[in-house]
Amino acid sequence: MKKTIVLYKRLSDDLLGRLREQAEVIFVDTAQADGLARLRDALPHAHGLLGASLRLDSSLLDLAPQLEAVASVSVGVDNYDIADLTRRGIVLTNTPDVLTETTADTGFALILATARRVVELASWVRAGHWQGNLGPAHFGTDVHGKTLGIVGMGRIGEALVKRAAAGFGMRVVYHSRQPKPAVEALYGAACRSLDGLLEESDFVCLTVPLSAATEGLIGARELGLMKPEAILINISRGRVVDETALIEALREERIRGAGLDVFVKEPLAVDSPLLQLDNVVATPHIGSATHETRQAMARCAVDNLLCALADQRPQNLVNPQVWAMR
Ligand code: NAP
Image 1: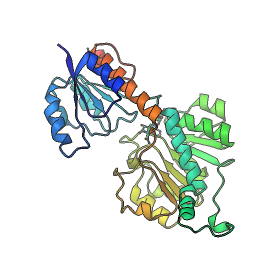
Image 2: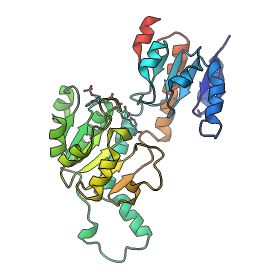
Image 3: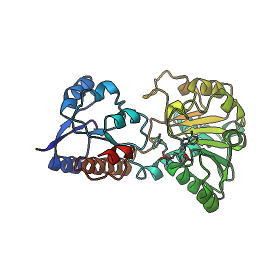
Image 4: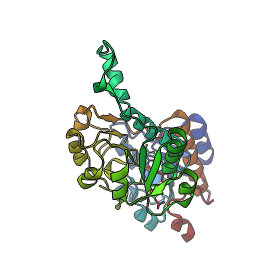
């Protein structure tokens, strides 16, 4: 008998076809008003789950006694209680690597947009304010030749270093749990304490995963260590930054600006104080959001799930202990 997969993310026809060859597929559109209720109805049948952007808490997992594997269409796994999944013997997979370059592009887009005031000045042109030559009130700040500080030197961090050092002649400093000799040798990046990095950088880019150790990593004290002309870029997760402290620092111009792709609460409320500030560029969590990369992520998640359900070790195991216990 075929196993059952519950999908809570829309897939392209070819990927859906691949799943349907191997399993019964139930699609639940969690964006609909009754989406969560439908998911609850489907969970008792599920051997596999595939989706993203949903907190799979224990009350949902309790409804899925047959569940063997969850394939997340993301690299970040902060929506899952990994210890709970492991206790239940449920495999969790993610989609690293395929989104690395695209997410680094997003980081650089935010660096350039904030430094050169692209969004603010493009809106100014549309509003009909461009009546003559610009003066210093509309100048931005250079990116090339500046110092980029990367917090979390993993896959995306390294892809940023490559762009910064080779493309923009930037000096790079980084902070991570472990030193990265290869990145130092290849790009001349230098390892720093978090405080040292904050004091030294013109751009601080966050690329750490959200965890108990990184939640609130950048608060009022840390923002206070940044240079007044520095810009904060967050492409990791919103809760890595104390958003209230950031709003205060931006309002008081204690830092120059912020480029933010992620927020404590998403979607960002239209009345968020962040949207009142000209020195903020806010994007709607578009780190990996290109046609090519989202398709590659979905393909990766499908491969992982089909492997796990066929008792073959998936490539991107988040909790390999479960596999070892089989
Ligand atoms: P990764 O390769 O695992 O890199 C993360 C790095 O963070 C690791 O190398 C790790 O350092 C470092 N780190 C972890 N905890 C730390 C701590 N407490 N202090 C300092 N450094 C710490 O992951 P990735 O593929 O680059 O992705 C990183 C994160 O980006 C994801 O988890 C996700 O949340 C976010 N992301 C966001 C988007 C978006 O749409 N905006 C898209 C993709 C990813 P060590 O190696 O030294 O242990």
